[in-house]
Image 1 (cartoon, helix red, strand yellow):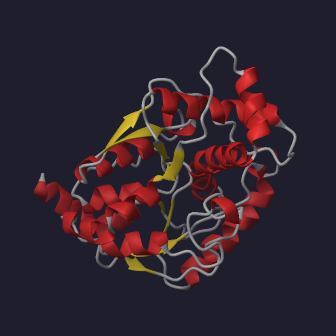
Image 2 (image 1 turned 180 degrees about the vertical axis):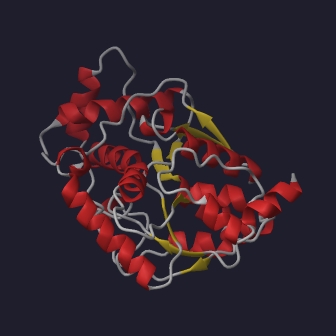
Length: 287
């Protein structure tokens, strides 16, 4: 299966290892993520102003490129890219006049037809089938107690949510297919503090402490998530002792498929936990 892939900025700069794990994991499933030949920053956040069409130019230009490459859908691994692209796409589909204005402004490009579908990789994996993923597991992650964390962008607003905004379960299903012991996390949809990490990091530190402490109290040995910004915040803003490793969902997939993973970009090194569980030893033996 080949599908056009939009990486976004973060996975090409400060989180390259997260992209690497995703490409390895999907290849092991027979899914080929074909990077768009030409793409732009999605804009990072969707404008909350209904008449602010200028902020829709970047995501729509990318969707035009998907259309030009003959694709009818595009997948992204980043929650924020997913949210921005999907909201911009929905706005164009529901507002023909705004789509006409955008197309008129982008007069050097072909018109966007509004036919592209935006997917998060988690949706593609669900479509692939969690039972099929389970068949690909070579190293069961038994004994690894992990709490899923969703944050905001996969679930808000409801119109673009890929799961139940109040009680999502897609990460739990994926983790169970990998053999992970899932720990219930009542704060799994809490905001991590987002871009406050730039100039109000005390807000993010407080949120991180709440989220991590809650998971630890319930027996979690790590958190798993799907957003590079959430990963940065929860990984770097833990101040207290006994910090929890923060896994990207594709890292645990790669490990379960017997593949090596680069954890050098992690602030809280998860290798100690993985060694303790015998997971890294199993991968080395396989290789």
